[in-house]
Image 1 (cartoon, rainbow, N blue to C red):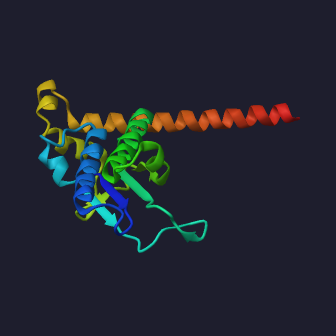
Image 2: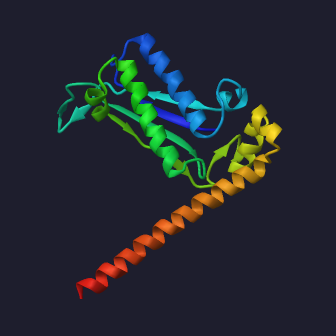
Image 3: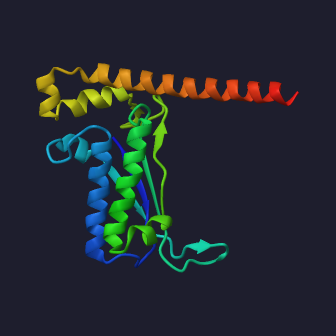
Length: 187
């Protein structure tokens, strides 16, 4: 059930290029979650892209000299690893470069990507909370390779959330240890 908020200023891209970009962004996000957009119709049908069209974009208080793009892929907690976030940002940026038809070094500085995870238990839809384990159980049923491998979607979702929470705990502990060590060294 990923969602993508895409901000593209009015007239920034040719209509055909924009249409290709929006489809490509959807496919990139579905793949980043570990699914195949070509075969998983359920994942495809549950992926929403919300297009935002600002009348103008300003940089340093003046109208921007070239289009600026902001892409915010949002998924339930546990879907992204650091490696997946890196790949996602790179692929999204490359897709915008292709859509604009420019050079990477010229377009990339104007593309911002914010991969966002919503904590498990805070993703709501259809009038209720939907957990990652439920989402995976449904999506994996549409992935023939996963069924053949005998993967339990509920277990996959639970493991992803647990792994992400361990990563966050390690980051927090490393930051606390660093702060203590710097505080001790400063005395």
